[in-house]
Image 1 (tube, rainbow, N blue to C red):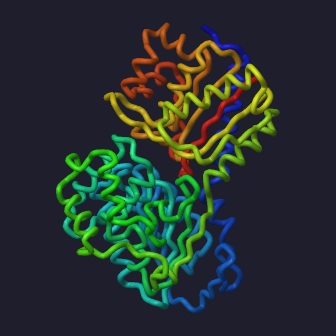
Image 2: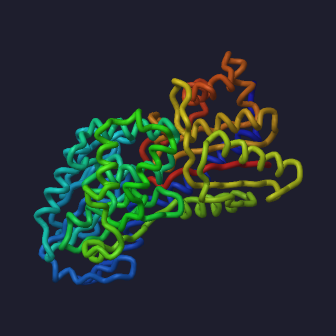
Image 3: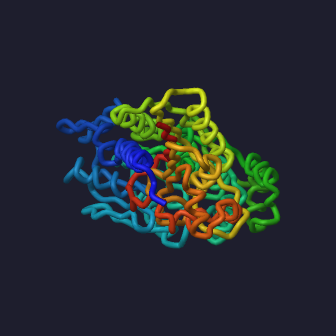
Length: 446
């Protein structure tokens, strides 16, 4: 069946609103917005650095956006930059002149990531108090900066990550374990950089911009402990699902046999500046402004959305129904926007990501509703282990799928949202955006 002109317009508008949010956190613009250089004085977030006092300037980094951030720094610093090393997700590289780029695995770390991190560590070991190090951090930084603690193999860390992702652990919980199984996370990279001056430029991909959770907080004091890690293992009942070496490390840490991650007041932390240059809220606010420009009444539902994806989808669908029925919490034409990052507890064997699963669950809830669409996408252009950023659905989606022999409920049970939306032509394919500030979800009602 042909979709109405109204639905076609809604979809077009949703794409434009989503793209405006992504563009607002373009890493090149973000770097140039927060750094200023006049003569030999560098200003970063209001803090001034006299570059004549430094013999060398180095750049290191890890994350999906670090190549674009590095490109901006190369243009910005020019000949002042000595060299650098960054780790990026496969396919997220850009041409650089002085900074070496290592492509590596995400969300599960791999050997390429380990070797790239090893090179970063070796570079830091050569620095001293006469050097300035700029550290570029963005979404995916945890997985792209693997350097296991002594007694742990990369394979062990990979297994822990897979287990945590499968049981639906939050990003904060995953990062707490990552920090205590690493030689660079949880403030330990700042210790490696000491006594050089360290400035971290951060694109936030965690709810509330919690610094010790972004990329597992390699340059900030860590608030989590080995005891917290043990509690997380118990919470999800996964002690018997992770390598015994992991349990042994946590137990030794609890007993004080392994040094805790650095806390507030550590001398290395005192020589570090952490500056957030882009966040989910910036993307969400830009999306709302675009919605206004297109004639919608815009409402930010929240940038703190987390929890099980299917449950969050039901709430968003309920908001759409309330708008249609009562004009609450905002009157039509309405654009409700939310940010944050949900989780998926995997029960099936399908393929998808949290954004595609969100839209599939929402599609079931809005079946039959006219002039309503739901869209969700990852600002990095990648949703889970797929080539899609997310998906879009309307009140006809479930029926159109049935006409093609697909049962939406069954695909949802199998966590197979990708193969549900692909034949419908409803996947959002953007390719790498070279940024990452979590997700954008849209509900449009006219």
